[in-house]
Image (cartoon, rainbow, N blue to C red):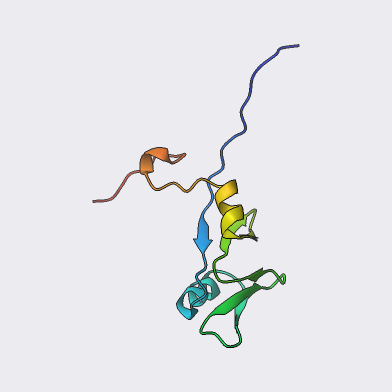
Length: 97
């Protein structure tokens, strides 16, 4: 038997922040099978996926294994590191000039 230290593989995911406005909801409608519902007494709306998952304004959408996983801001920040600098990304790629 061989003893070894291991680390979990990193996974690259894309997250979407939903601010609740109709333009953001339209972007979601163009990407995924979902619909929007206006929030009463507000200019905001929420997104509802076909599986019944609701996305409220301020939530984050992460697609994991083809399914939407919804996080509040505090849950999202505690679970994910947002990568702003290309040097921190998992995979290298070429930038087009």
